[in-house]
Amino acid sequence: MDSLNDIPYEVYIEYFLKYFTVKEIGSLTMTSKTLKIIFDSNEIWKKQHFKTTPIKIIDTSVYISSYEYRKIKISDKVIKSDRKLMIKELKHKFNNCDINFNIKKRCLQISEETIDLDNKPDIRLFIYNDLFKTSYYDKPPPGYELCEVPLKYFNERRDTIFSTHIHCCESVQSLYSLNIPGTIWYGYGVVRQPGTKNELYICNQPKSVQEAYIDYLKSEGITRSNISNHYIAETLDYQGVKVNYKSFKKMTLKKLFTKEKKKQNPLGKKVYKLKDKINNIDNQIILLEKQKKDLIKEWDFFVLYKNKQVSFCDKLEIAVKSI
Image (cartoon, rainbow, N blue to C red):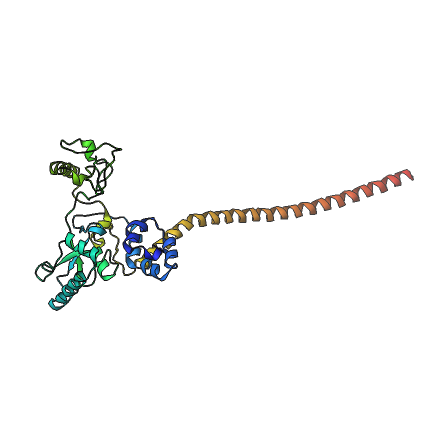
């Protein structure tokens, strides 16, 4: 990997974006043309906007899973001629893909027999992006729609028996702590040979253990994923706030400006109070200066009058002595 441009789009949006601020996103848009295309996209700014927007998952929210499991299918609204063209294009891409894509094709059971008009082919979104060199994430390509998928309780190489699984909150107990009969596990520190089955993962436990743990999760109210990023954004509830904006960048910056303006208001009030206090002190100084001048005038008049009185007394004394 030679530069930031070589990092796949989904890596930025899945793993990096949650740590980026608006300032950092702005800096990345000025780093290169490739990063400008990525970080000026509406999807990136949509994610940034939702960081400060209260989100609630409701019964009608459509679950589409994480990016690696996300699927798309040809939309029912697509006319028959366009559907044939899209399927033909898919077949051509899959038939001419390299060995890695052939492996993916077998894993997903996608073949020429399943890609037909009747079965309405559905494929992983990340494979579509790989095939067509695109970067769709929250929105499907033109002519396609995102597939609603059932909740998958356990993910391979993610959910171990020692931790709660990906869809749970921290209060839910792990499989190990429940001590369900039949649970297979190895103690910590055991050296495992490469390629051997790892019984530490829930997906490798006996079916009876998995079912027992799923029943426990359901009893705790875990019937849906609590990760809002795994749902179609438009189907979530934002507590009465409209979020279907044409430009999430514009709305995010507007929201940020309002927030910063609110921060400035308390500071502005402090400055206003301080200015008012300074004005009062200045007025007092002016008043004291005036009083000082009046007192000086009175003192000068008193000294002059006193001097005259002394002079008159001296003259009287001289006159008395001369008699």
